Length: 263
Ligand code: 13P
Image 1 (tube, rainbow, N blue to C red):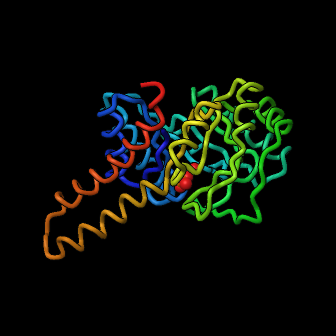
Image 2: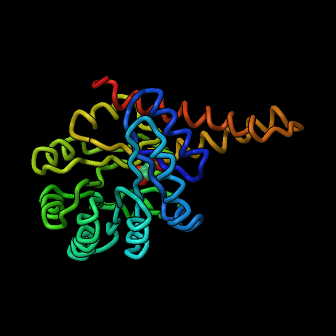
Image 3: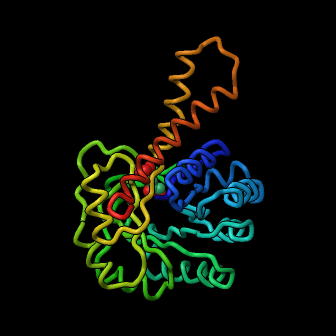
């Protein structure tokens, strides 16, 4: 499970959920979150939380399109970086991933790459349905081998944000990729997929599953619910605890599902 967090409370809640299940977890930050706090402040905060955790916590940068930010995050303690060159021609995507890999690998940092374009909105990255494209097996194999990436996010029909109709997912492509390359497959657009879809994707080779919108919903809907029920209460710690529970439950629900066949 890889969960997009956006502040101290959300990061801590996801880690606490993982600890309760004794499972490792990936905390992801968007470029927007990095810009909001700065890599130093955010990196220090997340490293401290990871250090104190009783489970293995990986800190990952999600959908980074900027080389300078990727390097700044690597310098500030991120364990893994997604370089998203999916809007670029294949050659350019490979070249930029290679550049990130050459900075990352000597520092022991992983790199995730994307091929094909995943639709929907993830913070400030928006890809319209008309702009989406899916990766072909041949191009995907070439991309993985030539770029040197450690984890691979192929566009397979899932999308960021809410699903308004059932997505058409290329389960076979995931299985074919798993057989063709020795690189873990990343599934984006986890929010709203049914349990059967998650399990089929994981059985076919999905090794990292990204969930962002569900965590944001737990936080914002939790705020709205608390304020409605307690409009006059001046108890910020109680308020934070309520939100912590909402996020923790959401993360745990997904983690249990992802690991069900393995627990
Ligand atoms: P969702 O917002 O659909 O959960 O997607 C998360 C994601 O893939 C982040 O990269």
